[in-house]
Length: 404
Image 1 (cartoon, rainbow, N blue to C red):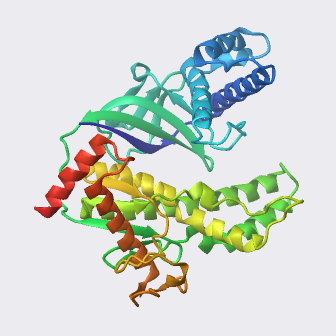
Image 2: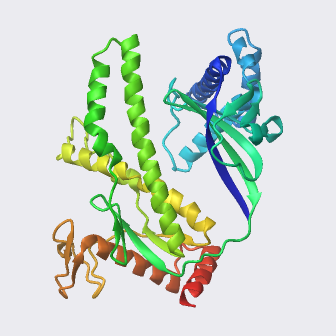
């Protein structure tokens, strides 16, 4: 099977290369925003969506025009890929997978991509990488790049530049060494509770740094905007945000790696995190109640990183020969796993579950995980319209491995 994998490193550019990195990122941002403005004006005029091929002709005119001749200084392929990114953003919006495309701001996730591997050279022995119009650039070689190079993405974060090298390689079809299936209930008091009764405590990386972050943000707000002291205060805020994100990512990587190595089949709830974390502020005409409490809940939900947890677990299970399957999440915390009686009264508190029908008692999160596991087994045994044929076959093969 073919495996796509990205290897990320910190770049070590010299002064001239740093200036060019900022210029090229700015050029790609300019092209993206200009194309987005053109799409919006075109829509308001009642015209059809402008596809990538037609938009690329506009890019040629911009590069050769008198108003933006500096676009010629940037490599053309990253500029073209910025247009492809915009087209992808529109497709995701039309498919209701994302919000409407927004304009990019300077200093916020600056990045650009070299999509042509023929223009890129990788010298791992000397820890350097050749990129068009940047030349040979050093990077912190922390691990070996495996596979055939496909593309390179350069990004900026907290004043540092990074490179993500995507490769493709052929690997043997993995076979899971584990023989167990498990259900997982995700929560806030407990990050992940398993159907065998064990659980992973939450990290709460944002919550632990929230007071410190608020202090730095107040200092920044009290400075004259764009002054040197304001820039120093902003750098501290950005550094703390990076620390929070890195801690969360490290926590999720360790958790998903352990789960994928120890289980052949994992069932999780199909949570709609975007809907769960929507604001409850309402409008001036129809104000909502308990807005502060809902805001705190939203912060706690987003602090857990459930979406990233599922994304990482999905590909790591596949890499280890297992499979991840999401089951419907409705009433998993209110259904009794013994008599299957469903009632809101069964969950008396956040942690206590006591069935009003048969008297079964357990921790509420454990009950949810057990129900997730049983629901997954029922879908596997009886089939479901949402199952694809290949998914059913793959799950059947893994389940036979477990039974044997």
